[in-house]
Image 1 (cartoon, chains in turn brown, yellow):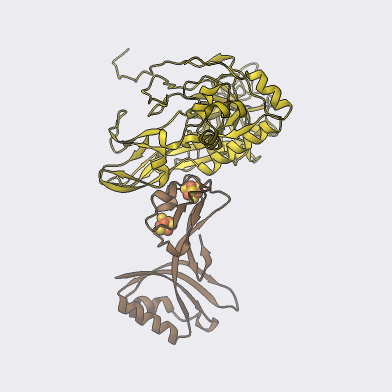
Image 2 (spheres, each protein chain N blue to C red):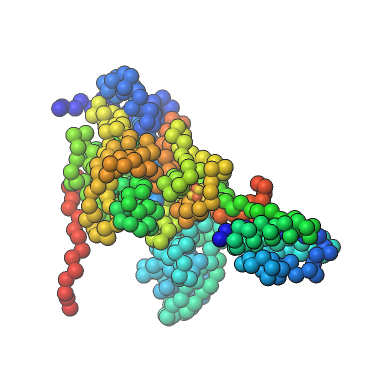
Amino acid sequence: MQEIKAFLRFPQEHFSKPITYRLVKEYNLMINILRAEVAANKAGELIMDIEGSEQDIAEAIDFTAHEGIEFRILKSGITLDEERCVHCGACTSVCPSGALTLRRDDWSLVFAPEKCFACELCVKSCPVRAIVAVMHLNGTVLAG
Amino acid sequence: MSILSLKSFAEINEKIKQRRAVVVTAEEIAEIVAEKGTAQAAKEVDVVTTGTFGPMCSSGVWLNFGHSEPPIRMTKVWLNDVPAYAGVAAVDAYLGATELTESGSLEYGGAHVIEELIAGKQVKLRAISYGTDCYPRTEIATYISKEIINEAYLFNPRNAYQNYGAAANRSDRTIHTYMGTLLPNCGNVNYSTSGALSPLINDPYLRTIGIGTRIFLGGTQGYVAWHGTQHNPSRPRGENGLPFQNAASLALIGDLKQMSTQFIRAAVMEGYGVSMFVGVGIPIPILDEEMVRYAAVCNRDIYTNIYDYSVPSRSRPVLAKVSYETLQSGTVVLEGRKVPTAPLSSMKTARAIASTLKQWIADGQFLLSEPVAPLPTTASPQNLEIVGGA
Ligand code: SF4
Ligand code: SF4
């Protein structure tokens, strides 16, 4: 089993088509819609958690491509509120990836997003709640 | 050792007024002493500044709201749904930093209200009363801010602990403590002091710090009001005079209206509750060579114990004794393994405090105050034994 977060953007003509229904029914996927946005006369957007076998997910991605639906796997991660952070370092002791470290010269917190594997352990370890778990799409934060 | 005093408080203050005082931070003095020796450093340097910025639970604010029309003798008070203690006169209340919101969340409490007051935000005040002939009103709901209430002064019963134990967790599950998240099987070590920059580390026997000492508190000038609760200067000490555990502590007071959220910040300790980062800086007058020796202490000579916080007892087992140099290096060897360490107190902000205080003194805006009375030099805090009673 595999679990991914996905971003789907589909053109207007797809609105009436039961895309998510087909993903569930024909590809045995478990779907949890996290956000749905459909603006009039514009493309619709969906963010969802998808759980299924690797093969089913791969086939589902092929199917969406065939239907002209944009399908992207989302990376989740964190954002750091630099205004709020007091550089205490509490998050660095729980971060298993080395993405959060304290500089030893000026003792400021350094976040290296490319190392982060989104375990979210740091979120609740931060006493001033400066860290928020988010979903990313090519570097753009989609939802907090 | 006989000590000839080189300078008095009055002489140092004279230099401060003339902007001739030589002021350095507790980190800088170590370098000066290493280079020039204690005798020369004691002659040249007048004041050493310190700083610390860590979660200090034993903190809170006294508030006076002013009288409504008709007036109320408040018996119960809530600020943003966080209860404050109102058993003092009609419109006085004390809001403790660790008091939690009545909504049941561990994410919001007195410290958050205090931070919002400092930020100038409006805070919802609700109070009830039984009504008296002179105070007929029985309830009130309104909004206050620091601009419209009479007094708001921080009064922290126990701050600026002289040293503090570090924490690890020997059990096989993650635990959440006021020392932060502790990973199983000693997966991390958390500590919470600014080491050589920490105020009471630089005057281990409280020679120059006493009641009335003017300090940096939360971004403004404050004062030492009393010794802190659980003040325990009788703890075992090393040859350099420094205790290995939490020893002396201070009760501090200062005007909340002048404070800054850069130096007072609400904290949530996951699974534990609310605490508050408090910024404290104390100037150490270099009266003589002894004081310069104390102030020049380095992290390699300051030791603390690492305690096993998985043992829920008031006397937790000691896992190791380590120096702050080791703790600050980022790893410590514990039970034969390299374990990552992390502070809970911000060294970056501690440095900002020490250098702000240095600037205030160098600019002639901040004079030193000789203690009005000394703090106790011995003490033996009691434990609370559970006894049967009436
Ligand atoms: S989410 Fe996990 S890996 Fe990423 S920064 Fe936080 S603790 Fe480190
Ligand atoms: S725990 Fe929070 S405040 Fe402390 S360094 Fe990490 S992000 Fe900053």
